[in-house]
Length: 336
Length: 111
Image 1: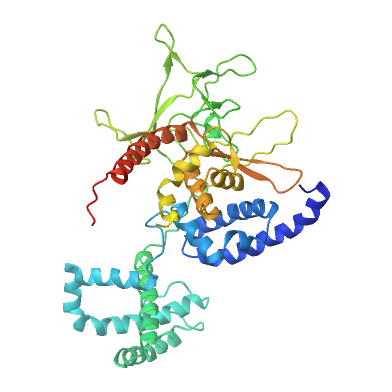
Image 2: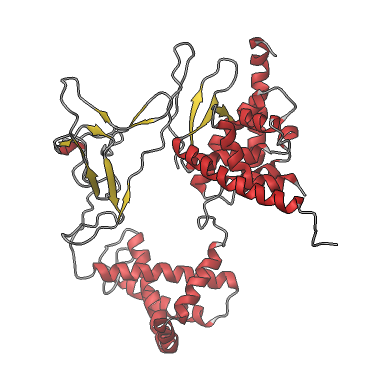
Protein backbone atom coordinates (compact mmCIF):
# COMPACT_ATOMS: atom_id res chain seq x y z
CA UNK A 1 0.00 0.00 0.00
CA UNK A 2 1.35 3.39 -0.83
CA UNK A 3 0.90 6.39 1.37
CA UNK A 4 -0.93 9.49 0.13
CA UNK A 5 2.42 11.18 -0.47
CA UNK A 6 3.73 8.34 -2.59
CA UNK A 7 0.55 8.36 -4.56
CA UNK A 8 0.93 12.06 -5.29
CA UNK A 9 4.37 11.40 -6.72
CA UNK A 10 3.28 8.42 -8.81
CA UNK A 11 0.06 10.21 -9.75
CA UNK A 12 1.80 12.36 -12.37
CA UNK A 13 3.68 9.42 -13.83
CA UNK A 14 0.45 7.45 -13.99
CA UNK A 15 -1.35 10.28 -15.79
CA UNK A 16 1.46 10.57 -18.31
CA UNK A 17 1.45 6.82 -18.84
CA UNK A 18 -2.32 6.87 -19.41
CA UNK A 19 -2.04 9.78 -21.85
CA UNK A 20 0.74 8.07 -23.80
CA UNK A 21 -1.19 4.82 -24.08
CA UNK A 22 -4.37 6.65 -25.12
CA UNK A 23 -2.40 8.50 -27.81
CA UNK A 24 -1.19 5.16 -29.17
CA UNK A 25 -4.65 3.59 -29.10
CA UNK A 26 -6.44 6.55 -30.72
CA UNK A 27 -5.23 6.07 -34.35
CA UNK A 28 -6.54 2.49 -34.30
CA UNK A 29 -10.06 3.73 -33.59
CA UNK A 30 -10.13 5.80 -36.77
CA UNK A 31 -12.80 3.57 -38.34
CA UNK A 32 -15.39 4.91 -35.89
CA UNK A 33 -17.71 7.79 -36.77
CA UNK A 34 -16.15 11.02 -35.45
CA UNK A 35 -18.71 11.64 -32.73
CA UNK A 36 -18.61 8.08 -31.45
CA UNK A 37 -14.83 8.14 -31.49
CA UNK A 38 -14.55 11.41 -29.55
CA UNK A 39 -16.98 10.10 -26.95
CA UNK A 40 -15.12 6.81 -26.62
CA UNK A 41 -11.70 8.49 -26.33
CA UNK A 42 -13.01 10.85 -23.69
CA UNK A 43 -14.34 7.99 -21.60
CA UNK A 44 -11.30 5.80 -22.27
CA UNK A 45 -8.98 8.55 -21.01
CA UNK A 46 -10.66 8.34 -17.63
CA UNK A 47 -10.61 4.56 -17.65
CA UNK A 48 -6.88 4.43 -18.45
CA UNK A 49 -6.09 6.97 -15.72
CA UNK A 50 -7.89 4.69 -13.26
CA UNK A 51 -5.84 1.67 -14.29
CA UNK A 52 -2.57 3.60 -14.39
CA UNK A 53 -3.20 4.74 -10.83
CA UNK A 54 -3.27 1.09 -9.67
CA UNK A 55 0.10 -0.31 -8.70
CA UNK A 56 1.82 -2.23 -11.43
CA UNK A 57 4.08 -2.05 -14.46
CA UNK A 58 3.51 0.50 -17.29
CA UNK A 59 0.20 0.23 -19.12
CA UNK A 60 1.71 -1.17 -22.29
CA UNK A 61 2.89 -4.19 -20.29
CA UNK A 62 -0.39 -4.60 -18.47
CA UNK A 63 -2.73 -4.02 -21.39
CA UNK A 64 -0.64 -5.24 -24.31
CA UNK A 65 0.00 -3.50 -27.65
CA UNK A 66 -2.30 -0.47 -28.22
CA UNK A 67 -3.39 -1.84 -31.59
CA UNK A 68 -4.60 -5.11 -30.07
CA UNK A 69 -6.28 -3.18 -27.25
CA UNK A 70 -8.17 -1.04 -29.78
CA UNK A 71 -9.23 -4.09 -31.80
CA UNK A 72 -10.49 -5.88 -28.68
CA UNK A 73 -12.32 -2.75 -27.57
CA UNK A 74 -14.04 -2.28 -30.94
CA UNK A 75 -15.09 -5.91 -31.00
CA UNK A 76 -16.60 -5.83 -27.53
CA UNK A 77 -18.06 -2.31 -27.51
CA UNK A 78 -20.39 -3.17 -30.38
CA UNK A 79 -19.74 -0.44 -32.93
CA UNK A 80 -23.11 0.58 -34.38
CA UNK A 81 -23.47 -1.14 -37.72
CA UNK A 82 -24.20 0.85 -40.83
CA UNK A 83 -22.51 3.91 -39.46
CA UNK A 84 -19.03 2.57 -40.01
CA UNK A 85 -17.51 4.38 -42.97
CA UNK A 86 -16.24 1.12 -44.41
CA UNK A 87 -16.67 2.12 -48.06
CA UNK A 88 -14.55 4.98 -49.32
CA UNK A 89 -16.56 8.01 -50.39
CA UNK A 90 -15.43 7.80 -54.02
CA UNK A 91 -16.61 4.20 -54.36
CA UNK A 92 -19.96 5.07 -52.87
CA UNK A 93 -20.32 8.04 -55.24
CA UNK A 94 -19.42 5.77 -58.17
CA UNK A 95 -22.14 3.34 -57.09
CA UNK A 96 -24.75 6.11 -56.97
CA UNK A 97 -23.72 7.27 -60.45
CA UNK A 98 -23.92 3.71 -61.74
CA UNK A 99 -27.40 3.26 -60.30
CA UNK A 100 -28.52 6.54 -61.91
CA UNK A 101 -27.02 5.45 -65.21
CA UNK A 102 -29.02 2.21 -65.18
CA UNK A 103 -32.32 3.94 -64.37
CA UNK A 104 -34.80 4.79 -67.13
CA UNK A 105 -34.04 8.52 -66.95
CA UNK A 106 -30.33 7.70 -66.97
CA UNK A 107 -30.67 5.50 -70.07
CA UNK A 108 -32.65 8.22 -71.86
CA UNK A 109 -30.05 10.82 -70.91
CA UNK A 110 -27.25 8.58 -72.20
CA UNK A 111 -29.07 8.11 -75.49
CA UNK A 112 -29.54 11.85 -75.94
CA UNK A 113 -26.15 12.82 -74.57
CA UNK A 114 -24.36 13.19 -77.95
CA UNK A 115 -26.90 15.87 -78.87
CA UNK A 116 -27.02 17.46 -75.41
CA UNK A 117 -23.29 17.61 -74.85
CA UNK A 118 -22.51 20.68 -77.02
CA UNK A 119 -25.34 22.57 -75.32
CA UNK A 120 -23.74 21.78 -71.95
CA UNK A 121 -20.33 22.96 -73.20
CA UNK A 122 -21.84 26.35 -74.08
CA UNK A 123 -23.87 26.47 -70.86
CA UNK A 124 -20.89 25.74 -68.67
CA UNK A 125 -18.86 28.48 -70.39
CA UNK A 126 -21.65 30.96 -69.60
CA UNK A 127 -22.01 29.64 -66.04
CA UNK A 128 -18.27 29.85 -65.38
CA UNK A 129 -18.19 33.50 -66.42
CA UNK A 130 -21.40 34.30 -64.53
CA UNK A 131 -19.97 32.57 -61.46
CA UNK A 132 -16.74 34.57 -61.70
CA UNK A 133 -18.70 37.78 -62.23
CA UNK A 134 -20.88 37.22 -59.19
CA UNK A 135 -18.04 35.97 -57.01
CA UNK A 136 -15.97 39.02 -58.08
CA UNK A 137 -18.57 41.33 -56.56
CA UNK A 138 -20.36 42.18 -59.79
CA UNK A 139 -24.10 42.59 -60.12
CA UNK A 140 -26.05 39.53 -59.06
CA UNK A 141 -28.17 40.02 -62.17
CA UNK A 142 -26.18 37.84 -64.57
CA UNK A 143 -28.87 37.38 -67.26
CA UNK A 144 -28.42 37.55 -70.16
CA UNK A 145 -24.82 38.82 -69.99
CA UNK A 146 -22.94 38.93 -66.69
CA UNK A 147 -21.08 42.06 -65.73
CA UNK A 148 -17.36 41.36 -65.57
CA UNK A 149 -14.94 44.02 -64.28
CA UNK A 150 -17.84 46.48 -64.27
CA UNK A 151 -18.69 45.96 -67.93
CA UNK A 152 -21.21 43.72 -69.70
CA UNK A 153 -19.09 43.97 -72.88
CA UNK A 154 -16.16 42.34 -71.11
CA UNK A 155 -18.62 39.76 -69.82
CA UNK A 156 -19.76 39.00 -73.38
CA UNK A 157 -16.18 38.76 -74.64
CA UNK A 158 -15.30 36.45 -71.75
CA UNK A 159 -18.20 34.13 -72.64
CA UNK A 160 -17.16 34.11 -76.31
CA UNK A 161 -13.62 33.20 -75.27
CA UNK A 162 -14.80 30.60 -72.75
CA UNK A 163 -16.96 28.63 -75.20
CA UNK A 164 -14.08 27.39 -77.42
CA UNK A 165 -12.05 26.65 -74.27
CA UNK A 166 -14.93 24.62 -72.88
CA UNK A 167 -15.30 22.70 -76.13
CA UNK A 168 -11.55 22.09 -76.32
CA UNK A 169 -11.60 20.81 -72.71
CA UNK A 170 -14.32 18.32 -73.67
CA UNK A 171 -12.40 17.05 -76.69
CA UNK A 172 -9.06 16.56 -74.97
CA UNK A 173 -8.44 13.28 -73.26
CA UNK A 174 -7.49 14.03 -69.68
CA UNK A 175 -5.93 11.84 -67.00
CA UNK A 176 -8.28 10.47 -64.30
CA UNK A 177 -7.52 13.27 -61.85
CA UNK A 178 -8.18 15.87 -64.56
CA UNK A 179 -11.48 14.24 -65.49
CA UNK A 180 -12.52 14.21 -61.84
CA UNK A 181 -11.63 17.89 -61.52
CA UNK A 182 -13.64 18.81 -64.64
CA UNK A 183 -16.58 16.69 -63.47
CA UNK A 184 -16.46 18.26 -60.01
CA UNK A 185 -16.29 21.81 -61.38
CA UNK A 186 -19.11 20.90 -63.78
CA UNK A 187 -21.27 19.70 -60.90
CA UNK A 188 -20.64 22.93 -59.00
CA UNK A 189 -21.56 24.98 -62.07
CA UNK A 190 -24.68 22.88 -62.66
CA UNK A 191 -25.84 23.51 -59.10
CA UNK A 192 -25.04 27.20 -59.52
CA UNK A 193 -27.03 27.18 -62.77
CA UNK A 194 -30.02 25.62 -61.02
CA UNK A 195 -29.85 28.27 -58.31
CA UNK A 196 -29.90 30.95 -61.06
CA UNK A 197 -32.96 29.34 -62.65
CA UNK A 198 -34.63 29.21 -59.28
CA UNK A 199 -33.92 32.87 -58.61
CA UNK A 200 -34.68 34.09 -62.16
CA UNK A 201 -37.82 36.13 -62.51
CA UNK A 202 -38.25 36.48 -58.84
CA UNK A 203 -36.70 39.27 -56.89
CA UNK A 204 -38.28 38.04 -53.68
CA UNK A 205 -36.04 37.91 -50.69
CA UNK A 206 -36.52 34.77 -48.61
CA UNK A 207 -36.07 35.12 -44.93
CA UNK A 208 -35.16 32.13 -42.87
CA UNK A 209 -36.85 32.00 -39.52
CA UNK A 210 -33.86 31.72 -37.26
CA UNK A 211 -35.88 31.81 -34.10
CA UNK A 212 -38.15 28.86 -34.67
CA UNK A 213 -41.59 28.40 -33.18
CA UNK A 214 -42.44 29.94 -29.81
CA UNK A 215 -40.41 28.18 -27.14
CA UNK A 216 -41.99 25.81 -24.66
CA UNK A 217 -41.14 28.24 -21.87
CA UNK A 218 -43.28 30.87 -23.65
CA UNK A 219 -46.20 28.52 -23.40
CA UNK A 220 -45.94 28.47 -19.64
CA UNK A 221 -45.03 24.82 -19.13
CA UNK A 222 -42.01 23.40 -17.34
CA UNK A 223 -38.83 23.60 -19.35
CA UNK A 224 -35.34 22.25 -18.67
CA UNK A 225 -32.44 24.71 -18.70
CA UNK A 226 -31.55 23.31 -22.12
CA UNK A 227 -34.83 24.73 -23.43
CA UNK A 228 -36.32 21.29 -23.92
CA UNK A 229 -39.84 20.75 -22.63
CA UNK A 230 -40.23 18.65 -19.49
CA UNK A 231 -42.71 16.01 -20.58
CA UNK A 232 -42.60 13.67 -17.59
CA UNK A 233 -40.98 13.33 -14.17
CA UNK A 234 -39.18 10.32 -12.74
CA UNK A 235 -38.24 9.93 -9.10
CA UNK A 236 -35.52 7.54 -7.96
CA UNK A 237 -34.38 6.46 -4.54
CA UNK A 238 -30.72 6.51 -3.52
CA UNK A 239 -30.30 2.94 -4.79
CA UNK A 240 -31.32 3.96 -8.28
CA UNK A 241 -34.76 2.33 -8.08
CA UNK A 242 -37.52 4.08 -9.96
CA UNK A 243 -40.33 5.16 -7.60
CA UNK A 244 -43.67 4.57 -9.21
CA UNK A 245 -45.95 6.29 -8.49
CA UNK A 246 -45.02 9.43 -6.57
CA UNK A 247 -47.31 12.40 -5.96
CA UNK A 248 -45.59 15.74 -6.47
CA UNK A 249 -46.61 19.07 -4.97
CA UNK A 250 -45.07 22.51 -5.18
CA UNK A 251 -44.09 24.78 -2.25
CA UNK A 252 -47.71 25.90 -1.85
CA UNK A 253 -49.03 22.38 -1.69
CA UNK A 254 -50.42 22.65 -5.19
CA UNK A 255 -50.19 19.56 -7.38
CA UNK A 256 -47.48 19.89 -10.05
CA UNK A 257 -49.49 20.09 -13.23
CA UNK A 258 -47.71 22.32 -15.70
CA UNK A 259 -45.60 19.85 -17.66
CA UNK A 260 -45.45 19.99 -21.45
CA UNK A 261 -47.28 16.78 -22.28
CA UNK A 262 -48.20 17.32 -25.95
CA UNK A 263 -44.93 16.72 -27.72
CA UNK A 264 -41.32 15.95 -26.91
CA UNK A 265 -38.39 18.05 -28.06
CA UNK A 266 -38.06 15.97 -31.23
CA UNK A 267 -41.55 17.04 -32.18
CA UNK A 268 -43.04 13.59 -31.60
CA UNK A 269 -46.64 13.78 -30.46
CA UNK A 270 -47.09 12.31 -26.98
CA UNK A 271 -50.12 10.44 -25.66
CA UNK A 272 -50.43 10.53 -21.90
CA UNK A 273 -52.47 8.32 -19.61
CA UNK A 274 -53.15 9.75 -16.18
CA UNK A 275 -53.55 7.64 -13.10
CA UNK A 276 -56.97 7.68 -11.54
CA UNK A 277 -58.15 8.00 -7.97
CA UNK A 278 -60.67 5.60 -6.46
CA UNK A 279 -63.51 7.60 -8.01
CA UNK A 280 -61.99 7.39 -11.47
CA UNK A 281 -60.88 11.05 -11.58
CA UNK A 282 -57.47 11.67 -13.14
CA UNK A 283 -54.62 12.40 -10.73
CA UNK A 284 -52.48 14.82 -12.67
CA UNK A 285 -49.59 14.98 -10.23
CA UNK A 286 -48.93 11.23 -10.07
CA UNK A 287 -45.63 10.46 -11.75
CA UNK A 288 -44.22 9.00 -13.90
CA UNK A 289 -47.13 9.31 -16.30
CA UNK A 290 -47.63 6.49 -18.78
CA UNK A 291 -46.78 7.88 -22.18
CA UNK A 292 -46.50 6.71 -25.74
CA UNK A 293 -44.94 8.70 -28.56
CA UNK A 294 -46.03 8.89 -32.20
CA UNK A 295 -43.48 7.11 -34.35
CA UNK A 296 -43.36 9.83 -36.99
CA UNK A 297 -42.36 13.24 -35.63
CA UNK A 298 -44.70 16.09 -36.47
CA UNK A 299 -47.32 13.89 -38.11
CA UNK A 300 -50.72 15.05 -37.05
CA UNK A 301 -53.14 12.38 -35.94
CA UNK A 302 -56.57 12.22 -37.53
CA UNK A 303 -59.67 11.01 -35.75
CA UNK A 304 -60.27 7.35 -36.42
CA UNK A 305 -56.79 6.78 -37.75
CA UNK A 306 -54.73 4.41 -35.65
CA UNK A 307 -51.53 6.07 -34.61
CA UNK A 308 -48.27 4.11 -34.66
CA UNK A 309 -46.80 4.72 -31.23
CA UNK A 310 -44.00 3.48 -29.05
CA UNK A 311 -44.00 3.49 -25.24
CA UNK A 312 -41.80 6.20 -23.74
CA UNK A 313 -39.28 4.47 -21.49
CA UNK A 314 -37.80 5.93 -18.32
CA UNK A 315 -34.49 7.63 -19.07
CA UNK A 316 -31.12 6.13 -18.20
CA UNK A 317 -30.11 8.20 -15.21
CA UNK A 318 -27.01 8.57 -13.13
CA UNK A 319 -27.86 8.23 -9.47
CA UNK A 320 -25.19 9.60 -7.15
CA UNK A 321 -24.10 7.44 -4.26
CA UNK A 322 -25.30 9.44 -1.31
CA UNK A 323 -22.97 9.38 1.62
CA UNK A 324 -22.76 11.67 4.67
CA UNK A 325 -18.99 11.31 5.00
CA UNK A 326 -17.26 11.22 1.62
CA UNK A 327 -17.24 13.77 -1.16
CA UNK A 328 -19.27 12.49 -4.07
CA UNK A 329 -19.63 14.12 -7.43
CA UNK A 330 -21.84 13.01 -10.24
CA UNK A 331 -21.51 13.48 -13.94
CA UNK A 332 -24.12 13.61 -16.59
CA UNK A 333 -24.49 10.29 -18.42
CA UNK A 334 -22.24 9.89 -21.44
CA UNK A 335 -24.04 11.09 -24.57
CA UNK A 336 -25.42 8.11 -26.46
CA UNK B 1 -9.38 -24.04 -27.50
CA UNK B 2 -8.51 -20.44 -26.75
CA UNK B 3 -10.36 -19.27 -23.65
CA UNK B 4 -10.78 -15.76 -25.07
CA UNK B 5 -13.05 -17.21 -27.78
CA UNK B 6 -15.23 -18.81 -25.10
CA UNK B 7 -15.26 -15.61 -23.07
CA UNK B 8 -16.61 -13.52 -25.92
CA UNK B 9 -20.01 -15.14 -25.76
CA UNK B 10 -20.46 -14.90 -22.03
CA UNK B 11 -18.73 -11.68 -21.05
CA UNK B 12 -22.01 -9.74 -20.87
CA UNK B 13 -23.34 -12.28 -18.41
CA UNK B 14 -20.08 -12.39 -16.46
CA UNK B 15 -19.92 -8.61 -16.14
CA UNK B 16 -23.54 -8.35 -15.01
CA UNK B 17 -22.88 -11.15 -12.52
CA UNK B 18 -20.07 -9.24 -10.80
CA UNK B 19 -21.91 -5.92 -10.58
CA UNK B 20 -25.25 -7.46 -9.70
CA UNK B 21 -24.73 -7.17 -5.94
CA UNK B 22 -22.04 -4.55 -5.69
CA UNK B 23 -21.18 -1.66 -7.98
CA UNK B 24 -17.60 -1.48 -9.19
CA UNK B 25 -15.26 0.64 -11.31
CA UNK B 26 -13.63 -0.65 -14.50
CA UNK B 27 -10.41 -2.07 -13.14
CA UNK B 28 -12.14 -3.41 -10.06
CA UNK B 29 -14.57 -5.34 -12.28
CA UNK B 30 -11.67 -6.84 -14.26
CA UNK B 31 -10.03 -7.85 -11.01
CA UNK B 32 -13.21 -9.48 -9.70
CA UNK B 33 -13.59 -11.46 -12.93
CA UNK B 34 -9.98 -12.64 -12.73
CA UNK B 35 -10.29 -13.52 -9.05
CA UNK B 36 -13.35 -15.60 -9.94
CA UNK B 37 -11.15 -17.61 -12.29
CA UNK B 38 -11.48 -15.88 -15.65
CA UNK B 39 -7.73 -15.26 -15.83
CA UNK B 40 -7.63 -14.49 -19.54
CA UNK B 41 -10.18 -11.70 -19.49
CA UNK B 42 -8.79 -8.58 -21.15
CA UNK B 43 -9.30 -5.07 -19.89
CA UNK B 44 -10.37 -3.82 -23.33
CA UNK B 45 -13.06 -6.50 -23.63
CA UNK B 46 -14.45 -5.74 -20.20
CA UNK B 47 -14.34 -2.01 -20.75
CA UNK B 48 -16.02 -2.34 -24.16
CA UNK B 49 -18.68 -4.58 -22.63
CA UNK B 50 -19.31 -2.07 -19.84
CA UNK B 51 -19.81 0.71 -22.41
CA UNK B 52 -22.15 -1.39 -24.51
CA UNK B 53 -24.24 -2.53 -21.53
CA UNK B 54 -24.39 1.07 -20.31
CA UNK B 55 -25.58 2.30 -23.69
CA UNK B 56 -28.18 -0.47 -23.75
CA UNK B 57 -29.52 0.73 -20.40
CA UNK B 58 -28.47 -2.39 -18.52
CA UNK B 59 -25.93 -0.51 -16.42
CA UNK B 60 -25.94 2.83 -14.63
CA UNK B 61 -22.77 4.74 -14.05
CA UNK B 62 -21.54 7.52 -11.81
CA UNK B 63 -18.23 9.08 -10.91
CA UNK B 64 -16.88 8.97 -7.41
CA UNK B 65 -14.21 11.47 -6.42
CA UNK B 66 -11.20 10.04 -4.71
CA UNK B 67 -8.67 11.96 -2.67
CA UNK B 68 -5.98 9.38 -3.34
CA UNK B 69 -6.07 9.20 -7.13
CA UNK B 70 -8.15 9.89 -10.19
CA UNK B 71 -11.94 9.90 -10.04
CA UNK B 72 -13.44 6.48 -10.52
CA UNK B 73 -16.34 5.68 -12.75
CA UNK B 74 -18.55 3.12 -11.06
CA UNK B 75 -20.97 0.83 -12.81
CA UNK B 76 -23.98 -0.94 -11.35
CA UNK B 77 -26.88 -2.96 -12.71
CA UNK B 78 -30.13 -1.16 -13.50
CA UNK B 79 -33.48 -2.93 -13.03
CA UNK B 80 -33.39 -3.59 -16.80
CA UNK B 81 -29.90 -5.05 -16.37
CA UNK B 82 -31.13 -7.36 -13.63
CA UNK B 83 -33.97 -8.55 -15.86
CA UNK B 84 -31.49 -9.16 -18.65
CA UNK B 85 -29.28 -11.05 -16.24
CA UNK B 86 -32.12 -13.36 -15.19
CA UNK B 87 -32.95 -14.07 -18.84
CA UNK B 88 -29.36 -14.83 -19.73
CA UNK B 89 -28.88 -17.00 -16.67
CA UNK B 90 -31.71 -19.27 -17.85
CA UNK B 91 -30.24 -19.46 -21.35
CA UNK B 92 -26.79 -20.11 -19.96
CA UNK B 93 -27.99 -22.92 -17.67
CA UNK B 94 -29.73 -24.63 -20.58
CA UNK B 95 -26.67 -24.21 -22.76
CA UNK B 96 -24.24 -25.42 -20.10
CA UNK B 97 -26.37 -28.50 -19.39
CA UNK B 98 -26.48 -29.34 -23.09
CA UNK B 99 -22.70 -28.97 -23.31
CA UNK B 100 -22.20 -31.14 -20.22
CA UNK B 101 -24.33 -33.86 -21.74
CA UNK B 102 -22.39 -33.67 -25.00
CA UNK B 103 -19.02 -33.79 -23.30
CA UNK B 104 -19.90 -36.53 -20.82
CA UNK B 105 -21.53 -38.84 -23.40
CA UNK B 106 -19.30 -41.96 -23.48
CA UNK B 107 -19.92 -42.87 -27.15
CA UNK B 108 -18.04 -40.50 -29.35
CA UNK B 109 -18.75 -39.98 -33.01
CA UNK B 110 -15.09 -39.41 -33.76
CA UNK B 111 -12.86 -42.44 -33.76
